[in-house]
Image (spheres, rainbow, N blue to C red):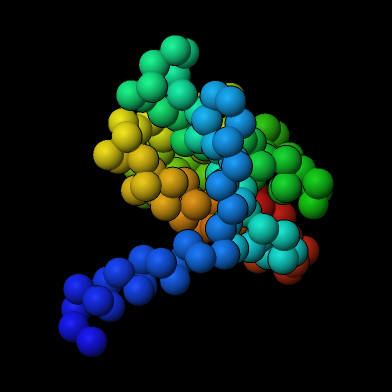
Length: 138
């Protein structure tokens, strides 16, 4: 096996457990990455208006919803929001309307999906760890 073969097999292996479901205005991607409670992480991809050359990739607000269901209200937690913003920025995304979002054109779309997924995973682990210790986030 050479490095090109390894890259192809690695690429296929990294997404082999994923489901991509068309939604009419984009896609719902169910990954095989998991929240700390073992649920699968979902990523939302939608077109911008009628344009087929511009996408918004997001967590659909799931970080906020997941943490809220665990007793963490990020809208009232400045330190928690700082952690979320830092993770989003590290992954070249922003927090908009309680969602981690990143814009992308078709060639940037795979990387944007990966970056949003990384931001979700980083944030959920950072905040879940504090929740499990019973320590306040702020």
